Image (cartoon, rainbow, N blue to C red; front, side):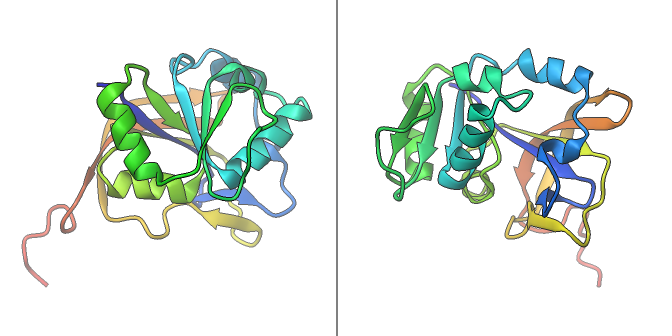
Length: 192
């Protein structure tokens, strides 16, 4: 069965972006960009929603660093607002429920999948129990005043078993986990 990886980039305080900040908060370094170009999930299908599609296809069209390999990968966009044909190469539009579609893909496809951005999509896939791995790349910036798109709002409680970690360029931290949705806080002994 193919694996599904949720893949986020975040500020230290858990935001996906910040008003006025460039992509990667302007802190992407050569080691991180090289890893992006050769990431082990390079042979998978990328899943995203309409907002992330618009953003990332725009970055790709502008030649932003690190977007070249993404342009070559097969991509699926879940959206009821976008219309075909989509301009970004290797992109398929699925205008129906993402949870149902991904559940079907995991049952019949052989190719693994990963997300990029797409906060609501990732939240729904995790709540549905479809996520096998959860990866976060933390950039060394706090965007308390300008931060936009809090990543974990609306998530259930999730236990995370670390499977990998790595530091890029002496400042960017990759953390990878196996997620488990918790019915109650971990270690809860029933005491107030």
